[in-house]
Image (cartoon, rainbow, N blue to C red):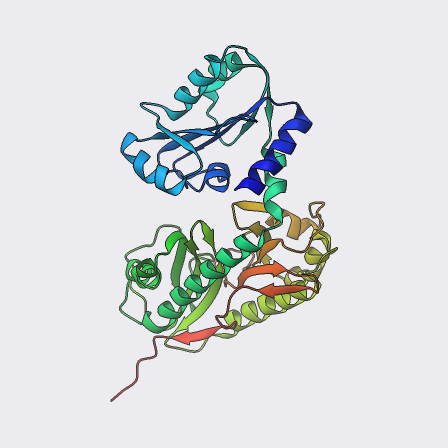
Length: 374
């Protein structure tokens, strides 16, 4: 935490900010968790002033005891009806008005008047904050490995428990039961089943349906179990009690070829354009993607984000990888009509020599839920 706050203090000095307001609400915005250890529930607002102890206001008030335990280096106070208002009131009560206030996080537009009253000028530091998050510390990598192991355990449990007659909602329970008892938390758990003979959807659902799995389904999942706010991310496709038909076999073979080509190029000094070029096998095969092809991960959804439009236009963001960055490679190949698709991908660590997967769950399109006669 000291290293992080010192790095942010350097950014504030460069931008001439005498204080910084970091805001988060409804578990959105990672700045407060990164600087204090409190993951944010309803709302939190953190004030950082060089030379002074940090002050964090938390809502709801009954969340304050837990926040004090998880953020022991911070002066945690009840936020009352609004943590943001309490923080801005404290700023405006200072003897001298700030010349410049740095702001990080999704501060609502309705607070602009009070924010403007707190300082002569507002400077948004979100881009600088994002750059601080790109290269992970050894501590962060250690926690990401734990999150990745929990994620592997979840998808292993899904492979073993998914079978005809089990609903999508029950599959979600199978996933969570593998890591919640171990202290993990759900970052995301998306999944979907659709008949491979007549597919109706190409990507997992954020909200599972009550549909029951059936023999011949494709079951796709995107799962991130989190340890202390540091999640893994694993994307896989299973054939339920049957062999994949030629379309799904070809979709997955194309996705695997793209993943291998991207992983071969992912190393310090590689660019987003290098990875986009490696994945061109997808469009050459007549397919496309719906999800982002690549995105940074670990402390937020980070650069580089190579979107569907980039895949189809071959124009990528300007980005160069460095050792210590973590990124999800996910060539989730779909048909142009958006009726069929597969999920394959995982969280990778850029190393001095190349890259390393943080996951151990095997790759490939695998079968699950085989019904055997007695």
